[in-house]
Length: 134
Image (cartoon, rainbow, N blue to C red; front, side, top):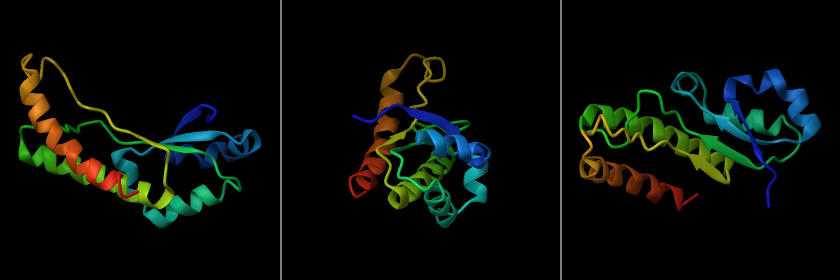
């Protein structure tokens, strides 16, 4: 069994690198949309390798402004773009877990779980198809 994963935003890892290395922490790395705009997979791989040990990794996907069950196709398109960026990173660093937020909000979906579920399943089926290949 892995020890707990410590949540840290990707752009803060260098600030705490000595502590992370000293304690050989397992990491849950959060990738915000802003971070995803400014990094590439190679830089993520290099940062992980710079830790000088092999932590168990979790990835925390962006969630602000995203909606996996979006009724608006443009919102869903952006959501899938961000989620696929996370899956690309996951394919490179092979985390144990990826945390995605479902985006369910009873008020947004007027208490109609079926609307949310129908659209949400489309998103998660696409993500699952990628996840099983990692």
